[in-house]
Length: 110
Length: 111
Image (cartoon, rainbow over all chains, first blue to last red; front, side, top):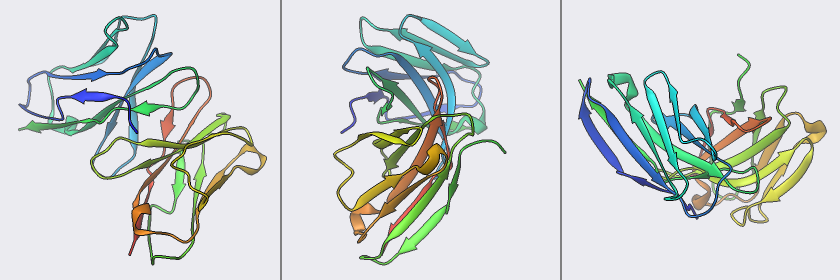
């Protein structure tokens, strides 16, 4: 069973606004990664943050990690229609397999 | 294209038939993973290889499922005596250090 929880489950915003998604987990982790999945397609790797990092940026993406609260957030700034997708956090702890969250379905309204 | 490649992309099979999927990882990646994803859920881990050695199998991987990675290159996932509950997207990923790259998946429909 999946151990990660993502919040919100679904999010609709106007194009140009910022979107924030949150991920919570239950154990210690080595790293946490965020993926995007367009409908019925494979997962695209967005960003990886290690357990000793607190914040990371990549283009319009900003990821934070709070290991004391066992949580991470993904911020997408200046959203575009092409950002419409499902977003998943995934993490590993002690071994290499990834445990995925339940996902956030993001819809950008033009 | 040097990404992870999966074949076929779609497979429709009758209940009780056997199916086999193939995954070609990124060539320099020594770790390969299989995941299963059902509608509206995140992927769930099935099994993992380091080179040709299968190091871990999930409880989700019943005895009808078998995976191989001969010579540590491509991998196959076989499902015997398929059931309707096997309908899902089967995803393959590979990595070398930490960042896992996924293929486009094989969508299996059991009718």
